[in-house]
Length: 287
Image 1 (tube, rainbow, N blue to C red):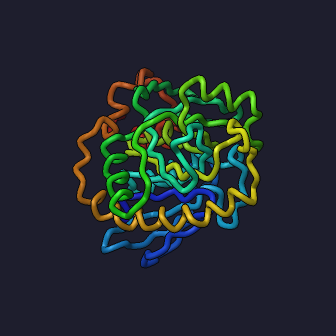
Image 2 (cartoon, rainbow, N blue to C red):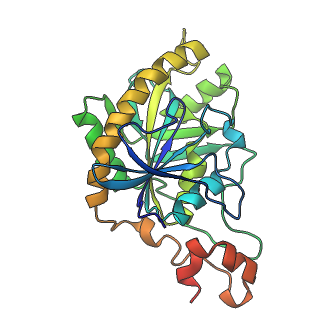
């Protein structure tokens, strides 16, 4: 435990946290392998936080290569109760322009090659995931964004694709018929695993482009990198403004006890190894 109850996941363009008084850097071993990088433990306005670069420092990992289970388990092992993530996304609607920030409340899964549950190997659990984002947390961070001068959009649907390629034009148009608001490659697995770990989770979706549905919307990496730099600065400001408010927030949402009725396996038949490995997550339900 590090007394860091707030976790920050930095996405593309955000590989460290500015304005943080660094206390330590920690490697956190997990039953699922190594997290993306060392966790930076520090303080923002007297509040202890843990920061992790989703793709590793220097952006070394494809979205599919990220060990989402290790990343979220590592936060849980550190004592984190709330995670705010930042990630680059494409806009699927005209009204969401580059450098806007969307706080999605829903997801559609178009990934194919990723582990996205802590369970299996003798233990079965089915968490409720109808509302995958902690909306109370999302509203809090969105409000901080508005006060920092960001153009904020609350709610909406994030379609999570496998990548690393961007969408084909046919796919992009299809997603728009589904009512999708933004498109990205990373946040869904984080949300699923955070819910299983009973961690509140919300994301800032930082718009970099219009995907390829727009007439002149072919995505270029040069264009995206330019917007990433502008987005990262605003994301840092919003996080610094949000952290004291998150620390003062009472966690009275459903995230807190998401596993209470989710584990369907008789504890008497759960393998001891599984109980030991998942103790930070399921321990309170095994007594």
